[in-house]
Length: 468
Image (cartoon, rainbow, N blue to C red; front, side, top):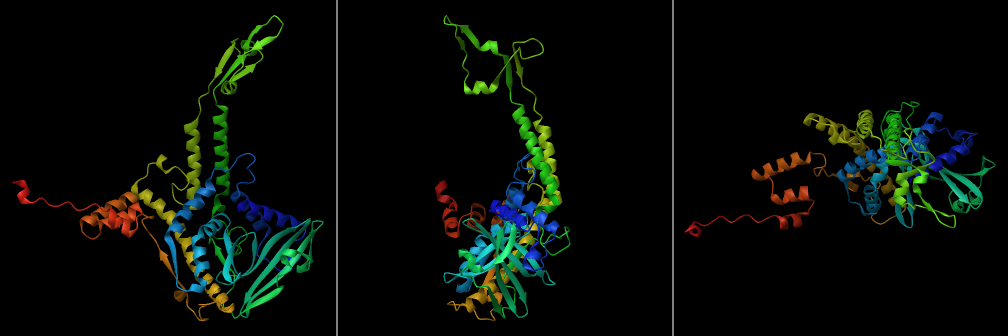
């Protein structure tokens, strides 16, 4: 996914090397040259090929951060969709919300573009870089964007530019096709390419009441060029991430270089000379070939025929430095101690542990607030399209969000210290305010029926007659 994105961005930037997007399309974007460079950098990092990857491969920081945020968001946010017309796309979006979380974390934003195809509502999620913002409302709502798609057809290369613009009259969409000729982009007819021949050059969603594209964005302040263009969550720690990758590569190199070796003179491996003059040599196994290095000479300065090399590795010191970098990344991004670093390597008080969790959940809350807000926009966009295409069960034009869907927040103990949560639950069972089956449901992951079936039976009190 990210490999394709980086390739796309690199391709687009090479096409616009001489002329900018604004010059080619005639539309002013909110993307400065500094932002282009940042988006390209984030995409390369997300794809596992940052600029320093030839010297130091990524050590897994980005998947760890995105994965941790995904873990909580996907478990905490649920959806009940009351309207049948928008039920499938909304539920599908919620099940695949991890992609949006990754885009917000690693690239800054993802754009939801609704689609009506094959008699059903669908959508696509487009990462920042594949779309370029062109206009924002005063409250930060995206009202204009260019969606760029590369198309290769035989020996010809094209870029489809889909221009979106919303105002009080409606949401206007224009399609233009550009062909790459001698590294220059020239506008051609949509019919020049088979993939775009059936597209409508221009159309408008009238009286839609909101933009028909929805931007899920990270709300980190843009300090790059001061614009409203989203910024990746990881941006403030790019230098530290590079430092961690290089330190891990240094450790990996030292481990490899510190392998035990034996340097021995070649003549030690010559058995004898046969009558026909041939010399028979000792044949070493694959493992011994890796261990024993045959050299011309005695192999050491002391005149020894064989010399063992087994250096002491600095594993503990090297790892401690790497953990310090990890903790600095966590501090810079406020993602909480233990998100990247080895939390067990540092003794923490209960207050420090809780503080780290609060930092992490502060970011989780921001992401969830953004998703919740944009679910409302998405549901209303889908409702408008369902009515426009005359779908069965399409909601009325004045339908309210609460009539379309309900967000369910599933805490299910994910935000708690599990051991403390268990202790609290056991106390509540003793006090009679919690059932034993509820304990199994919350901590064993069983549904209600299974939990009730698996609760051990209460011991039967002994009868006085049994003691006689």
